[in-house]
Image (tube, rainbow, N blue to C red; front, side):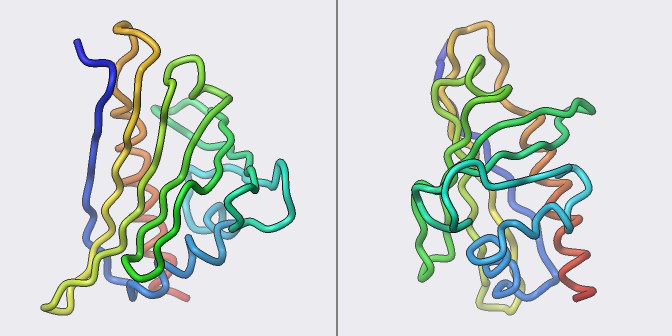
Length: 152
């Protein structure tokens, strides 16, 4: 059984794609106010939420259970509207050697838009399940965020 994997979900959005990318690129600390399953987030190390060396601490809900992790930005591409986050510690490190969220905000030629979330991971061993709960979490959070960005 493979230890590495990739899961992806694409969610249609109604809010302007620029608002979506702005939230994750410049206002990451506000995500907790837009998504019900994000309970709390704070700076753990560093002073700028969007610097690659800054580490954030997240408390959120997966499969009905409150969990924690730390996160930092691995890469940021404003032109492609893509941000890669590395997640570690908390409930992540005991299960996964590598765990990444990749956000891609997509603007289609027909005027529609979507967000694509990809999870790249490497499990510590074969007994670890793929992170399907995180896919469901990202889907639910994306719907919450989209609804709140439409109100703003």
